Length: 312
Image (tube, rainbow, N blue to C red; front, side):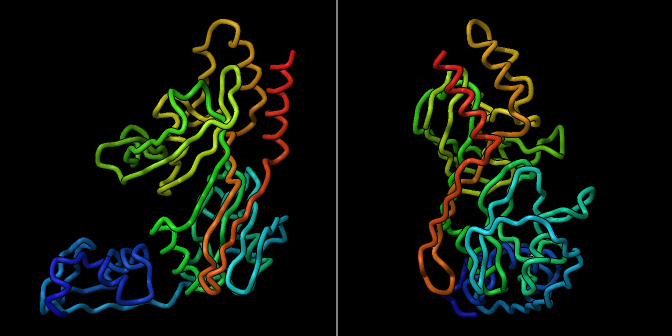
């Protein structure tokens, strides 16, 4: 290793030398597959001239999830990737409590050559959507595409735009929320804004102002777990229908909008959050894919109701 590498982070330097994402490199380091001068290093270890690095890249694990003939709305497909419009209520990949009926199970029935780099239960999955979030999600069919898409996400070259309905009215629009996220210290199943969390940035813009809520366009700059839901709840405007971060929010309202808010809350069977647009350069062709899907029927019904209530 030459002097030009002095001080560079191990994970960043390795990702620049080989065709693997930093996420993949970090997993290899944490799994003991990377040695620095004969010992297991930290991923942030600074390099020095003369350092010796040994790296073993295991073969992708065999897929163990079962193929299932489930409805699958494909918005785009080619030999390298496909983009699906995931319905609300569908879990992305098998996990404890959800061994079947997931997006991965449906993909395995449709696609025979999914990328194995995601592991046994997450083949092809580049990014996720929460179970009750609907909308666009990209899936890689081979490992080079998986790595390229993961890198594009990390470098913020993938545009992800959501439509959300949040309680109350934002203090300003557009609005940027820059607050680090991590596990909630009091509940490990939730996420929260914490001082030692990972940087998370969300951009929100009001599209439609309603009596006690607002329809928002929300863009992700980073992609942390539950990011939009936690960020909006953090600033006092949780997503309508979000039982984890915004349950019972309407009870604090008073005056003429209280009844309207209670009716809205009763109509929302799930969180009003939809990934409506996904734009990125195709890893192989360089073509710009800019894909969009409308609100699903359950969310469209809520907006139609809200406008009808306003007109009375």
